[in-house]
Length: 327
Image (cartoon, rainbow, N blue to C red; front, side, top):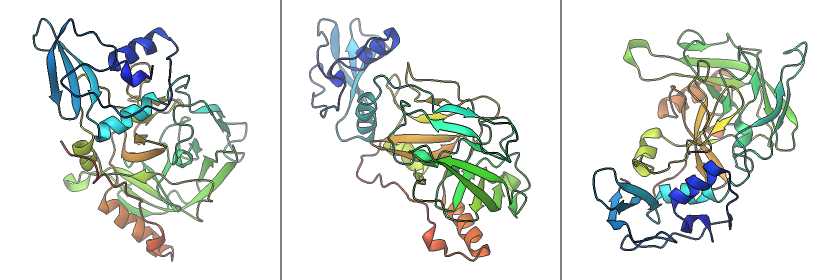
C-alpha cells in the first residue's frame, strides 16, 4: 500500500515510531476527490472536507475550529508534486550531508577531509554539488557557507563580510567543492561584491567570482524567486511543506517531522534554503539573507565585465513555475 494512500497523518506516525513504510516507492498521482476520504482512513468520525489553497483536510467530529487533519494536496499543484516526491524518497535516508568533514593539520594549506554521505536526503539531486563543504573564510567549520549559482559565481551572506560594494578583499581565498565521485575540487576567489543594507535597501548577500570555470563535475544550482515561490508553493496550516535547509554542523532539515534539525543558530546565516523538486535542488533564499534577484544577476554581470568575461555565459538558471496554479 503506497504511503500517499495512507494519508499524511499515517506518514508522521510511521516516521515518529521508526516503522518501515510499506510500498515506499514512486507514488501514483493523488486522485481522491474532496467528496470522500483518501486511502484507508475511516469515515466514522469525518464531518466533511475543507480546503485551504492546495491543501485538502478532513474535518472531524465534533466539528470545532482546529479539529481537522491534512489529507492530501490538490493534483497539479506544486505542493502536491514536491510532497509526493519527498515521501517517495525518504525511507532510510539520513539528515547528515558529509561523512566525514574536517580540517586536517595545516588547513587551509592542506585541503579539507570531506566526502558525501550517499544516504543523505539530498543525495541524487541535481545541484547537490553546488554546496561547498568548506572555504577559507568560514571561521568555525560550516559557517558562512558558499553555494555555486553559475560556473563562475557563488553565493554567501552579505553581513559581516565587509563594506558594501565591489572589491578584492577575498581574492586568493580557497573554496572547495566535492563531485559525486567524491573528488575534491579547489577553486580560488578572484573578486567579490558585497551587498548589505545601506539606505534601507532590502538585500544581504555576497557574490564571489572564481578565477576559472567550475568543472562539469560541479553543477550550479538553479534558482527561483522567493516571491514567486510563495504564490505557487504556499504555506498551508497543519500541512507539510518540505524545504531543504542546510546548517553549519553538516545536517539538512526538510522542515517535516522526523526530518528536522536546528537551522537558526548563530553562524547559519547565508545557508541555502532550497526547494526539493523531483531530482533537483532549487535555491530560493539564504538563511536570513537575500534570495536571487535581477540585481544579483546585474552584480554577477559586472564582476564578469571586470574580469574580461562574457556575462551571457554566466546567467542564473531560473526555474519556470508558470505551469503550476497560484494561490
